[in-house]
Every structure is written in C-alpha cells, then in structure tokens.
Image (cartoon, rainbow, N blue to C red; front, side):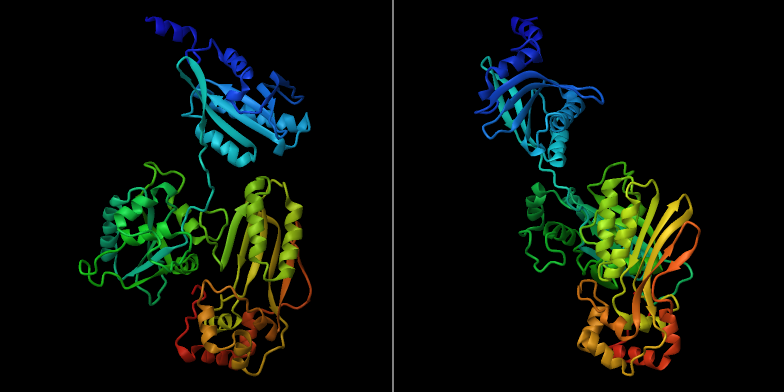
Amino acid sequence: MSATGLENFARPVLGLFVNEGEFRDYLAERLCLVEPGLTLLRTEYALDNPEGAGGRVDILARDTFGHVVCIEIKRSDNSARGTLNELSKYVTLLVERDRVPKEMIRCILVSTHWTELLLPLSYFACTTGVDITALHAVAEDGQALLQPVTLKALRFLPQLSPDMDLVWFESAEPRQHYADFIVERAKQLPFVRLALLLFAPRPGLTHDRPSCPMMVCVWRVADGLHERIEVVTGKPIGSDFPYAAPGWEPEADAKDWIGDIPHAELPEFAQGWTHGTSEKLHALDANYVLGQVIRVGDWPRLELINDDASLLKAALATSPLGSSDRANRHSYRAVVTPKVSSSWSKAIDAFLDFIAFEPSWAQAARDYLAVLDGSDISVELHAFDKKHFHYAVHQARVHDDALLGYFEIACRAGDVVFNGLHGYYTWDGKTCPDDAEATILATYGDIAWARLAVQSAVDKKRYEIANRLHGFMPVVDWLDETDTITAGPPAYRYTLQDFVAANPAYCAQISATLERIGELPTDPSA
C-alpha cells in the first residue's frame, strides 16, 4: 500500500481526520467555514428525552439573528435514515424541552457523501418548515472545505393534467390504429407520461353515440424537460393559446403533438374529437365500461400503484385525494378515515367546499364531521351538484332516476352503516308556477344562456333560485345507531318525481322551451 493509501486508511474522514469527532472539533474551532457569524454554544450538546432515547447535537451554535443552529456531521451515505431521525429529534426536543420556537431553529448538515442524503433531506426541509442548510465536505490541498449543496425543489403539485382529449370511434380497429400511432410517436418524447383509456359499451345499454370512445390523459412534465418539448415540436411552449387548462401548457403541447395524426394517413378515423373533462368522463362512465388502459411513455417498468381502476378514479376527479389538478364539478366521492388526519382534513375540507352552495347543508355536515375526528371508522362522503332545476325536470319526465343535488355521509364498521347524514331537496307539495318560460328567464336571463349553462362544465354561476321558485327547499335527515332516521324540518318530503307527476303540463312547457334551439338529452348521465 502506498504512503498516501496508508494515510487515507489511518484518516478515513477526507483523508484528514481519524474520525467524525476529530472533524467535528476541527469545525467547532473554525465555525466561519460553516457560516460567518456563528457563535459556538457547545459541542456534543445533550438533549434528554423522558419518553425515549435522547440525542447529542454535534455542534450547537447561534447565528447573528439569534437562531439556534444544530450542526450535524456525517461521513457516510449509509446513515441517511439515522440522520433524519436525529434532526427530527433535535428539533422536537429543542421545542419541547428548551422552549425554542420552531421558527428560531436551523439545521446545518455537513456530509462527505450526498448520493443517498439529498432527496430525504430535501423532503425533510420541505415538510417540516425548518430551515435546512446542506454542505458537502471535501479535501483540497490538505485542507477541509465546505461547499454548498442545493436541495431539491420538491413541489407537491397535482400530477394529472385536467386537459384531456375525448375521441370517438365507430369501431375498435381505427381506435387501435390511432393508439398505435400515439405509442410510436411518443417515443420522441419518452419523458412524457400518457394513458389511453379505452371504453366499451356497458352490456344491455343502448345509446346513439359511437361504440368505441377513448380518453387521452397526460401527467405533469418536470420543469427541466420543457426545452426538449420545444425542440421536438418545433415551437415555443404556449404557442397554441388559448389553452383549456392554463398552467398546463407544456403538457398540452406535448400531448397535442404526440396525437397529431395526419388525416391523409387515416381519413375519417375518428367520429368526434372534443376537449375531455372529468364531467364528460363521469357521463361516459355511466354508459361505458373501461376495457383497457394503454400506458405510454414515462411509466415504471412494473406498475403496482397506478392500476387501471386508480387511473380511472384520478381522471374522474371526484375525490380530492386523486392526482388531478381540477376537481369534478358535478360529483364528489371519497372514502376516508378520521384516524389518518392528513387525508381526512383534505377530504372534508373539499367536501364542505363542494356543498357550500347550500349553507344549511354545509353547517350540518361540518357539525357532524367534527364529532368524528380521530375515530377509527370508515366514512363515505358523496355529493352531487345538480344546479339546473329545469334540466332536472326535463330529464325526470323520461327517467325516474333523475335527481336534484344532494349529499350523503355514511359511517361504516365493516359492511354495516351505523350512522349517517343525508341532505337533499324536498318539494312543498303545492308550489308550481304558471309560466315555464318566465321561470327560465328569471333564472338564466335568456333561453340561449340556459342551454349553454346546463351543458357547461366550467360555468361557475349558481341557479338555486329556480328551486325556490318551484317550492323546493334543502333538508337534512339523520341516521342513528338504532337504524332510526330522524328528519329535520319541514315535516313533509316530496321528490322531484312527485313534482313532475303532479304538474305534467307545466313540465312539458319546460322541455318545449329548452328545446326551442335544439334537442336536449334526457339521459341523467348527460
């Protein structure tokens, strides 16, 4: 072994120090190498923990702004997990034992290796809110130097773009041809993640739409890859303004370029091509079944997490716990447990926001859910926003399953629902205006806007005035542990179907008025 090799063997830390302790003492005497202005408080500062193992901060210091600074020294990638455990312990004990505000604690990690440490430390910095500094220890000309390490910018952003394509085919053959085209063309942008959802008609259902629809979905592309999209597509990102989903221009440009099939190559291959939304997919899901998912591009070789059902659920966007950037505006559905506080809080906040258009519902649900905090049960949250009363009447004239808006909360223990809350609309049993057109004008302003609004997934206006004009009001019922339903006021309960049955001529007026400018579907899934 050479003299240099023997020296490195004897001094394994950077070839300069016998062990971490010697390196620690070296830095403690030269804190300016770590950061100018640091004042040494103590090395090997002991933090007792009455509930378990304590800890020892390698170097405890204070900066010029009064922050308490914990300096931890590591020389091996193998200690990544232990390092984060130590930092977590230091922060917690300094807050609980020494009463230091978390905002006044800083952590500086000095390590000779960063391959395994960088990602977990970046996550620690992102999630704890504690200021973290990372320094890479190197040896140069027989001296120890500390070089800054840039932590990864972790942004926990929605991953599934709300900009989807819905393409209709009369048969499976042209659809498969188009799917093959996408798979091949996507090889030029291999870092783009796409999924092709291929549907087939549900058995026994008949409708007048083409039999083989396909939804094209795209996921977020990392910021550093945007230039590569521009190189391949031959145009700057954002050139195809306006976009259906502002903020998702790179993904839209990549998806559109990949799917831009020459029509001369496959004439009339598609029977319809529209912007896809979670609401359209929800309507599609009522009449079609997902038959196949083709994963294209940047997917793990072995995909265990994002199975077909999970991808469909994410695209439907009825739960805030999926990966979509835009929530479904018609339907909400989530199954959560209060014992997992993070997902519970996110789910109920989104649920209460979804039903906020009826303040009495939102208040009743908020009070009910507050009692469940921390419980070890399964809670189903479901809501449907049918803000167009006149359209619901038009549908109910043909379909008994047409509904107005409602919400449901069901608490389960196993397969048994033992408690719940249900909010919906009831008719007063007597109110019915004389002039259908007058109520449509009072609600929407004109018939043209009424038609646009009832078929829009992006219109944010509310039209609950129509419910009141026809004697419908929000009510809430409770289901208790004895399987008894307690109805809130008023005492009567009449459904939308009761209203239609009692007022057939008026309801026919509604349909006739809405259809003056074209046929309007009656399918409740539309």
